[in-house]
Image (cartoon, rainbow, N blue to C red):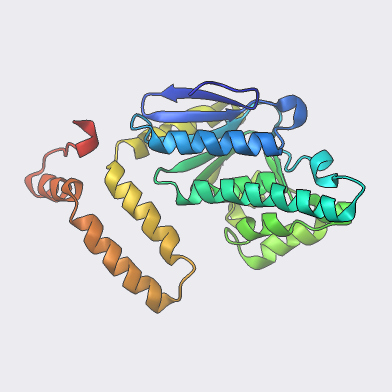
Length: 265
């Protein structure tokens, strides 16, 4: 996968780093950068060498959200609405690519994440942030409202925390984001990449097949009723326990040996 003006790609053992690299533009989610990121994710899912994906960014801003020049559109209201719908739909598709992909995606947040930038963090399976990072949904400050970011962010945290972010437009600290449930934990800025890499490499040692089925099962059941979720969970548990990797894992536990996963052969 070649680098682009929007994204750098570096493979570290079994971990693929995708780094947004337009700090001069706040790593905004323009139509072009959204398409680039989605294509890179699709390629990463298809790459057998990559077991875990880390999404990071250069500069002091992780992601400043949508390109307001694009969102402002033309002078024609109907055309502007059509353009906005295209941007928001493509962004939604990219976010869902993260969620529906069969490999874990970890957000490595070094700076400010605003609006759809916070939404991007919420779409990732895990998130580690520098303790100096901040999070904001400022649409209300511009006479608008962060309705699409709230879809993802509101599913990561308690609704009152999500609404506080959206209704005030205030800047919240990384510690707040941990307390709210948007990110897993914070580390010092100088240790951010090392800690994220360590977490990714730990996950990369696990069975790819088990993780693929497990991630699918989690997102499949999370919006269901408790009864429906248990039924789906049972089906998925039976499926994952029947895989070759699970059989190897069970045998290794019983014989006190280290398992060798099928993707390591």
